[in-house]
Amino acid sequence: MSERTSAAADGGGTTVVGVGDEWENDDGSGRRPEKNAGRGVVVAFGLTMKTLRLRAGLDRVEFGRRIGYSPSTVAAFEQGRRIPSPTAIDQADEVLEAGGLLRLWKEELEKAQYPVFFQGMALLEKECIELLMYDTHVVNGLLQTEEYMRALLAMRRPPLDQETVDQRVSARLARHGILDRKPTPLLSFVVNEAVLRHRYGGTDVRRGQLEQLLLIGEKANVEIQVMPTECVDNAGVNGPFTVVTRKDGKKFVYTETHATSALETDTAQTVLAAARYGIIRSQALSPRESTAFIEGLLGSL
Image 1 (cartoon, one colour):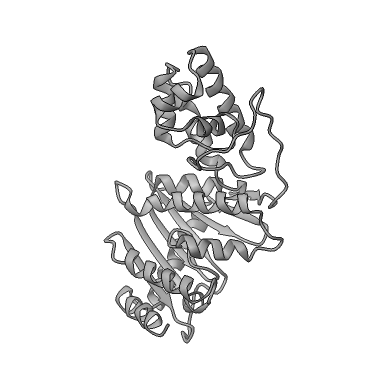
Image 2 (cartoon, one colour; image 1 turned 90 degrees about the horizontal axis):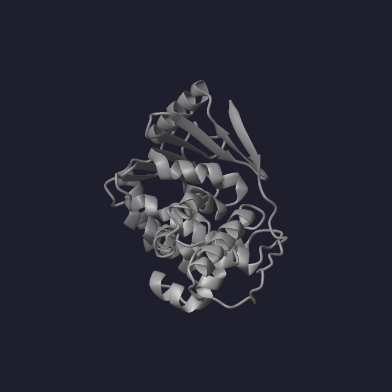
């Protein structure tokens, strides 16, 4: 069967009341919740943390000192404006003697930093042993530099507000942890040549992105291949997709369109998608040839 979710609309924030607290500036620590996605979860967690802090008789200064954050960032956590890291949640649970109550929120808070349409895929990325990715429009998010991310998000229409841009960049960068995760997943990327030739963000952004591809391509668990525009055959003409294999061997196929995403779970469809990806890889340049190709593009800048 297929599990389908509609993409959340960009923009249009939700008003959150701080329950007796004035809104304060914070030092930028922690991830922001995605608007119209899991904001309610983040606010509920913050109120729970605040209640436990008050019960423990700690002000924000002392509590922040014990968990390693400024009072203003503690306020941002409690008001649902920032999402604490998993380590910060563990520390808060211990300091407040919550008995695991705060730790229970970890998975939901992790999901809350992503748009609704990507939340299922984000969780699968964290559990996978293999990712097979074919991209035809932009460089895959797991390979993007921060500058490339911001260039892409700046081109969205209607425009995204700066807070949403910052949140999505932060969330996308957090996903890069998969590149060095232990145990190491197998990661295969095939990208169309045209993607590498687009000058999104200008020459400097493009140069940095090409350099990053070469750097990541050196990792033992990563293979990056280029599908040249002059190829006669391409089994990927139907568009980009990702095949995910979970630790238990179950496969999923993730696709995105203009306003929706789909996470395919039907065994026949996922097996066929994996086979199609194998054909695409055989038609693309080899990893070694692809490295030389990217080096050539970089040298021409």
